[in-house]
Image 1: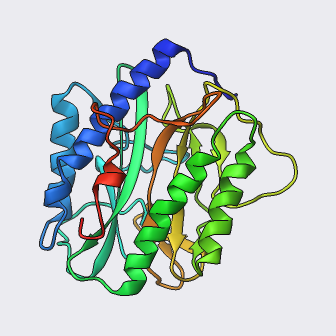
Image 2: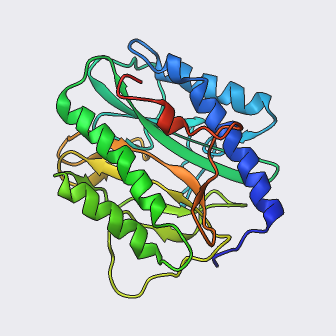
Length: 267
């Protein structure tokens, strides 16, 4: 069932989104060469918990019985999503995706971004730029009068025109009083009938893009999804409100700044 949010519920989601955006921006300078991914995860958790919120991913079981062990997903190079933080250190030349969510006052926020660590090659720089731009191209389609397929179709057309691939086995989703709700939000055109977008719907839009082919597999840890061909991948995400006009990004800082517009190729 697809839910339409009240103004009060949307206010709660804005507050949750602002805290999550804060957790990211306060870690920007820590996502650097030599950083231990487990330490980055601990920093996120401390910020979230100290503000009275709950990490959304930690203990999450999804559709299975294996629970996720951390507050953030930290995915490096060919790891698309759901990488588990560990004692691994970030190395120069790598592309790293960080995905985090939280629950505050009963409402969820979810966002993700990719970071270029140290000196990276031009392919990874292009992948970073294209993935970030694909997010906003998708968000621009998230308005009343359009359908879900308009979001994915716009993302796919843009990404493939740049010579990259959209991951198809992982999608965006509805979000609100649950982390994952209906509808699914693919990053590619499915064709046929599609769900109409209505004012008050809240979606997590999250293009995942590979510099090679789109097929993935899951590692033995039961979580980490990697590209089958070993190609690097990028990931950007915002929680978005559908309105009768311009879409509203709910994962912004309290002052209205967008974390993904603050970072640059130099991070």
